Length: 80
Image (cartoon, rainbow, N blue to C red; front, side, top):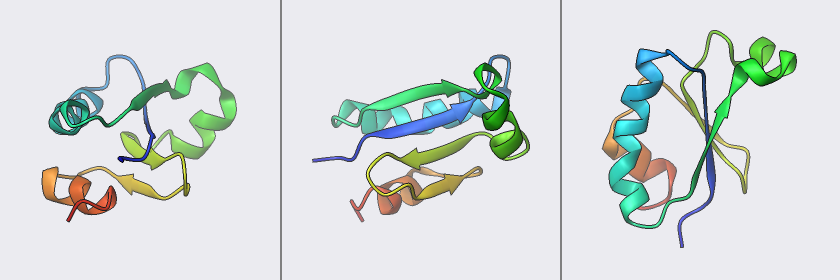
């Protein structure tokens, strides 16, 4: 079973759109990804403003920063 994840980003972020595209094959395998808009909370802007897009595992809190590819995502999720 794949861990639940959060993808931190914001509207109009081209890199965030690219990150979403990298995750789509894993969503097809059952990965649940919550899209988190950092603009909704000041603490998210402070923590992730210059680091988005960023994939975070809900179970461990581990983070995978951009840029990442499918192989890195697979390893991050424990599939590799």
